[in-house]
Image (cartoon, rainbow, N blue to C red; front, side, top):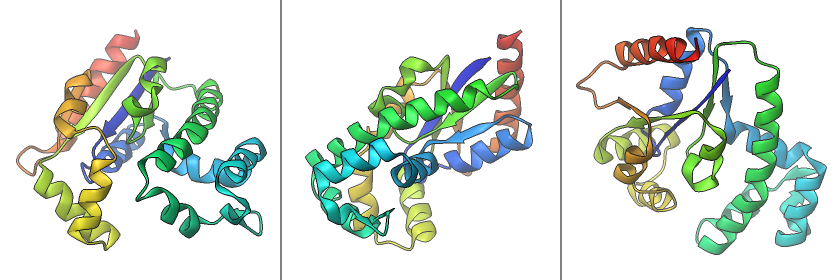
Length: 195
């Protein structure tokens, strides 16, 4: 079974692309959702977070998201620390998930595929590319946040052009090209690559 990564900058439309793959019968592992779940369910990860961020990191056994967000969003070192604790748990969880799948390939959707080093565990990486201004507008609308907040989040990711050059395949989500035919073509190529 091929292991495929799916990545792109904030607001690029990678979740939309992932949903199309799901409609085609391809299982998708959503790394961000898994990280949120594991921070609440993985006892070892919870202990590490408490050790590094203090007992206020959890309230009634659940991650205190507001407290953690305040600590990491303006502090690059704290964000890197949180990611260094979370990524290994997510990688382990995704490996267990992949073992249970039977499709010709699986997709691991994550914003930080290269930043987390997960690309070493993948056969190919698909990048979703979208113009910066469009990404900013989409994210402001989707998350109901200011332009400044979106730009701050973008700074915590590898620059889009650099990320796309690291990918094996690129889907352009620029409102000039339809994404469905691009996904279908890539799906065909991956099925052939598997056989």
